[in-house]
Image (tube, rainbow, N blue to C red):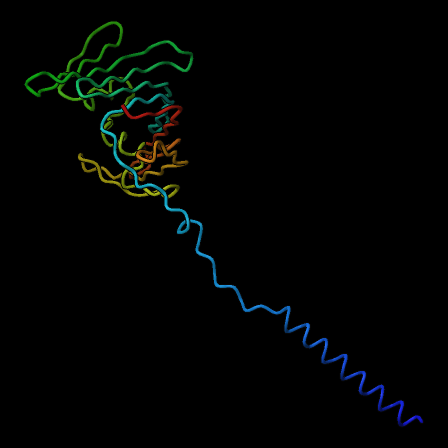
Length: 205
């Protein structure tokens, strides 16, 4: 009797074990293929450079122990480029205007309120306002993220031979055609000059 009971118990054990194995096989899945990264899965539009634009923002420039901070309104169209500089409290400090004449030549005028100063380029007059000569065409490209990777500092050589490490942050995409960085940081090689530009508004003209 005991022997028969033992055999029945043994048979039940193997039957239960078989069922458990079958269930385990049914609920086992082959490993899922690795998913592509988000950067590859979402194709971001390629940036197109807008030659004409309107920008408003806040610019600060540090040169050694000197710090200048201004609000800036910058517009550029086929006939005119204009940069207005305001104090943090809103009073206008100066205005740079570049006019393109019919013969293709340009004239730049700095209006500082008390006098007018003329030059051949905007870059030559930015030092009078900000204490540092800036290549504004390059800054316009930085704002649009041209040749820059978001959140990665990159060394860029300017026309005067100086090298700046530029970082563009928080790209904003517009109309699937253009983009702009909400914040630009740039440090001149040697570290004695740095600038930061916070873009409050940008649009292609």
